[in-house]
Length: 320
Image 1 (tube, rainbow, N blue to C red):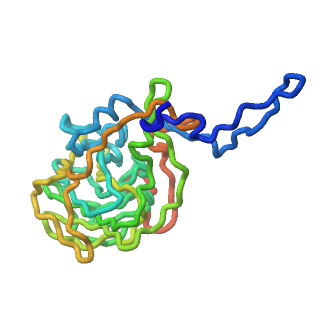
Image 2: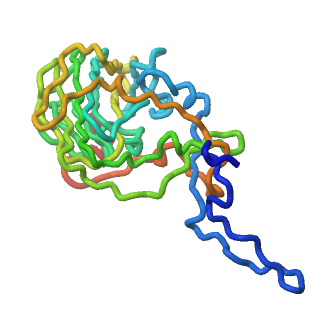
Image 3: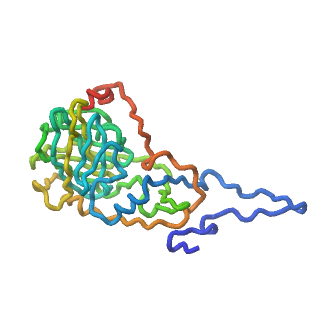
């Protein structure tokens, strides 16, 4: 097989030599594979969707959203109701300075919004900022939220406002997720070959900040955990509101307001300039596959709980 195109042969993988036979013809077991010789793979939710998103401009992902979230035809508007649920963009960044805007298109009488940045480990059936994998700016009170803990931050925002989201990740951070080179074709399905879990560390100098209608709200978070962060938003309404709440993303380059300049950070670029991913699935996983995990992003759909401090764990009232 041609390893140059990503298809590895047994020799290149250090496969055990053929078992020797004794004089009686019985095989002598040699070089049994250990757990380290197996590779865990996760099937993609939809081969068609992942291939459809390839080569397209940045938009909201059909894969990286809660099932109840509805996308517009152009993939730029998100509508949801009855409880916080998240949606993420098709592209993320682990290094560089990036910026996008979100317009509060319609919130209605009971609608609320939290938006910001999330890794793929962020829980989709929860608001941005619910866990350690996402960071949010909240419409109510203008607070910032991380690990379900709310803190005073900036001005509240409402329907019609435009919120800008700024991310600075200095060099030295790791993506902490599989990339396009880890996509394989196994038994007519696309799978992601998961890399060994690594412990993510705080990235010194990293910054998350927000603007409201062009007014800089200050730095919300510093020295965040390394990883690939995606534009994200989550919406909420009370059951009596029949229509959903809607927000519209703008990944640039033409923004409603100028991109902010943040002290100590390199100039921002629009998220629309994030490199276009092209999936080139390899023919065979590089080692025998272990049983796949249950979901495409390796997380469960269950909501955990926190009982300490000012948290958002109590549903649904504290989720507003």
